[in-house]
Length: 149
Ligand code: UDP
Ligand code: MG
Image 1 (spheres, helix red, strand yellow):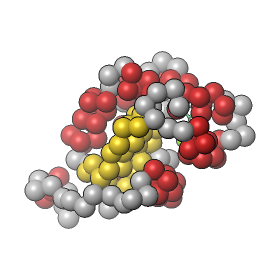
Image 2 (image 1 turned 30 degrees about the vertical axis):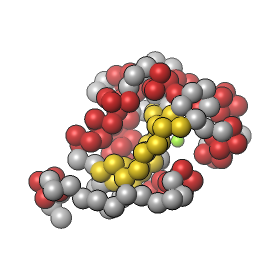
Image 3 (image 1 turned 60 degrees about the vertical axis):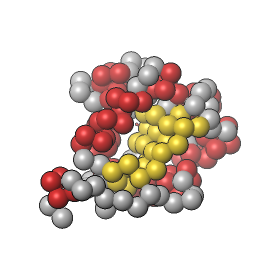
């Protein structure tokens, strides 16, 4: 099954949104495969956002990500990359639909609470970067009530 890398950014942690965010993925029917609570080094944040290094907001983005602890996670499930992005909502919170995480909890693009991989390919790269030690292997007893196979 597909996997995605999700990170609750420092503002999400400070604002007490960890439980709400995890609940949304958990209740949907996705599997938590890895999770850690940590401070990120500057060089690591730069590596995570390497594709955006030419953007004018890059330095500010890196400072934002290292401004406090984050929750790094891997979630697994059917179409979890795209559906995860839809649960998160648009990058710019004013474009994020109500009911999405950013639509419900964010105002500024520079304080938009959460990261989610934008493709299966990038998800694989991000998971390898953040969780080089691998993921948990498990399946819920409820699996057949959520998934056809
Ligand atoms: N970002 C920003 N200003 C912008 C665009 C993006 O501060 O004009 C930040 C924002 O936190 C965003 C992150 O950079 O979540 C990564 O940008 P991307 O376009 O990859 O958005 P995402 O994939 O997070 O929706
Ligand atoms: Mg992105």
